[in-house]
Amino acid sequence: MGRYSIFAVAAGALGGNRGWRPAWRKAVPKPSYEVVIVGGGGHGLATAHYLAREHGITDVAVVEKGWIGSGNVGRNTTIVRSNYMLDRTVPFYEASLKLWEGLSHDLNFNVMFSSRGVINLAHTPAQMDIFTRRANSMMLNGIAAEMLDVAGLRRRVPLLDVSPAARFPVVGAIHQARGGTARHDAVAWGYARAADSRGVDIIENCEVTGFLREGDRITGVRTTRGDIRARKTAVAVAGSTSQVMALAGIDDLPIESHVLQAFVSEGMKPALDVVVTFGAGHLYISQSDKGGLVFGGDIDGYNSYAQRGNLPIVEDVASAALAMFPAFSRVRLLRTWGGLMDMTMDGQPIITTGPLPGLYLNCGWCYEGFKATPASGFTFAWTIAKDEPHPLNAPFRLDRFRQGRVLDEKGRGPYPGHH
Image (tube, rainbow, N blue to C red; front, side):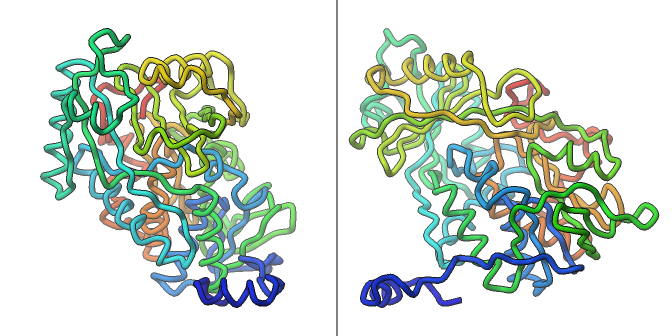
């Protein structure tokens, strides 16, 4: 497959744009592979790419029940950051951010990564102390962080209501300038194209209906397009994890599936050039390159496998947005959608071998999935190739829940809105 470049674009224009080929092949499943990856979202595609690039394993199939980009990778608010606190989580998300910073070059595909910055607002002195502790932890791990006072926020985000009369007065914020956003569908397409160019088969409209077994060992998958055998079978299906793993007889995973809604407004002139999160509730908001405000908040408060949400969350996130930015009250909501989230009790993922021989599991991403896509794929590929965790994902093993080694970033235990 040819490389994208300014010269390729010029040649295409001169040829009437008739010579472009599809970004990836419409592969037909073979009877067997060395590795089958169940799930063609960002994490599954990234895993396939790094298996091929880092480990030379190209006899790989990615099976996706829909089309590429139909799941959570195309249903999120695109935020990328590494402003974490715990020594066991900070290195993972920082490694992911570093991969983001070079991802367009790596994939030869513009993922539109924008280091516009991420600001987390504090509304009480106690919250400001917590953010200061987080900033210190980041800096001890070699990650730049900045504390902003009210005057600094007024300069950085002019439309933000920082007046004493605000519904939730702001006392300061933590700012990670290297954080930002990326284009979600471009990430899916870029990883798909890169994996395909190295020989990976991407098989769309191919739903897994069961697993092949020899004793306790998983030896492949049953699909709507026939049985596919594999020496190793990896599952990366986000909110559908419980349903898919139940097909293998695993029905006791420490996860729940919830709907997370996201929203976009009508387009308008540039008004917000940074990602802002609300510390008095739960809201994150940015402005897309097309001009729409993109925002989200809490998960819906019940278990569901539906990719749609409910009106109370619409009211909740809208009221939080207007508490921060009263000027947005006249902006019209354009559309809303729901992504299916698999929530763990500590808000951090599971990247592990097992729980059956021949099976590998990547799940439990909660609110962290999109930002972690590169590091998730990189470490999951390592785990599959070497049958052991990479140092970055070693803390994310499944057995941490049995051992009590939870990774609770907020330090207040599990609750429905944990992130």
